[in-house]
Length: 257
Image (cartoon, rainbow, N blue to C red):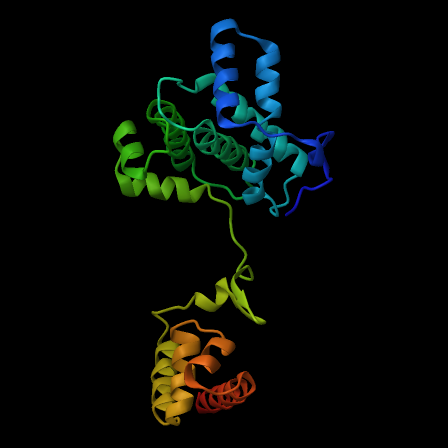
């Protein structure tokens, strides 16, 4: 999602300025020493592009971009308030998890999917611990560090955090090249389904009966994730030939099921 010449929360994003790291540190020192509102405002404005870059990961979920931007700014302000100048870490590196955490908390609190109170409470504790440890360590902690901090098992913390994650559409693309799009639903299967298991055996037998070139194409395309262009270059034929052979092989497999 691009933000050039886009107005968000009354701000023309094309006019936003950025600060060098030394300028950020100088402003942070001034804020810590004098509480200067002018320095704080300048530091906030100089990091709004960073907020925009972070919220891109959270768009496309039905949330208003203006709301996400304002929430991201809250995370930025928290980062300014908690940044430790004695640590050797870039301010932007510290900001990103703080901004992301604020956005995740918002999405968790307003999620349309209902999660049990105990899981939500544990997830909230984990998020608080993550922010606390981020301030202490000046980096984003890993799951083991979060679990140790709140005295919970790693697996339970993972489950709790996953429970408040945003759902993903089965039709969301995970890979796309040369028109060959792979969706999440293409990678999901029921391993306990007896019919699927029998179909898999049939497919394997059919593949064994394909010609060597067809077997190679199927292997490269669906086991190695190659595009038709890559397969063509690898086996020395045209992309059109790969497409024709692939379609023929797939039709034979389909007809065998």
